[in-house]
Image (cartoon, rainbow, N blue to C red; front, top):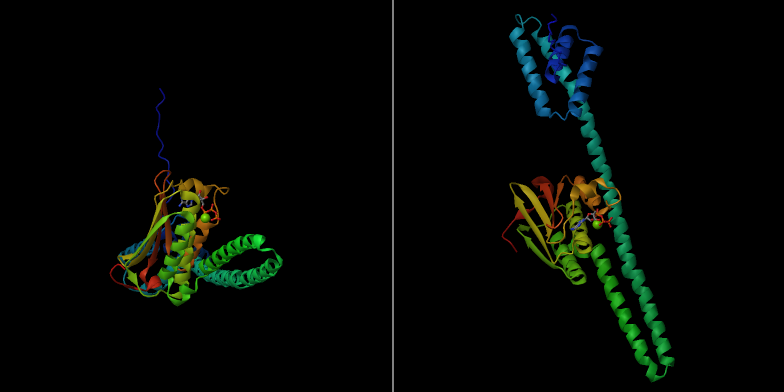
Length: 325
Ligand SMILES: Nc1ncnc2c1ncn2[C@@H]1O[C@H](COP(=O)(O)OP(=O)(O)OP(=O)(O)O)[C@@H](O)[C@H]1O
Ligand SMILES: [Mg+2]
């Protein structure tokens, strides 16, 4: 009769077991190969999304084990030195990734500054050059009108009226593109000005409530203005909403700003994973915030409106709170 023998399958070593074994090999024999295992373990830890706290606590436990098993204090000093080298090598992939992120953030900030300069240039061009062209058109029309019989002068008057509207609208666009009020008075007055324009153009009721006073660092104000601008543009363009609420405040030392609409909402995951539906707006918002150390979350579902939440650590926002204005 055959008897079925169940063989126990050996499980691969856990991260902790591998760490202890590689550490023990390095503490005993040293050498580049053993140190190379520390580096590989660091890379594996990153891939497995282990936190620095998890690694240092594992290292601490490993040293505790080493101290318990240590026979007298003969090699203790060398073992502790080896432990420190081993930990530094394990953490080196994290250090490299951290530097990479810092470099990317610096590059992103420079890119945003260049972008802002370009936006300023376009805003001035729309304001000054288009404005001057319109003045020239007004003068040319006045010339034409002088040579026309009175019965036709009324038509020229209507064209001038339309030109005045074009001029007014262009001025408004150029101010919204890069409001001087943003530099002079700050991002909240700039957003009030922007909301007034969007509200009229898109027939939206926009309510702004803020419990924050004072100015924020320049790049933070510009980034917040651009993010709210895109959120309002999206609300006007896609949401079919009738109301939008912008709320600014602080919660547990975190600066928060939300832009919420009561519109049609959208499937966030579907939009994020579909490159045909994904525009530049949401990505741009995310990148603007990355550059100033903040986070963005989008809460939306079809039929349930959209809420964009911006969060910034207090150091990055650095403004004083006061009662709602
Ligand atoms: N407030 C909103 N209400 C409903 N749908 C929205 C809202 N905001 C964004 N969306 C959806 O998310 C998509 C992506 O938005 P995003 O701003 O990235 O791109 P876009 O507005 O389509 O184009 P772009 O911003 O590049 O001009 C939109 O096409 C729309 O389907
Ligand atoms: Mg958009």
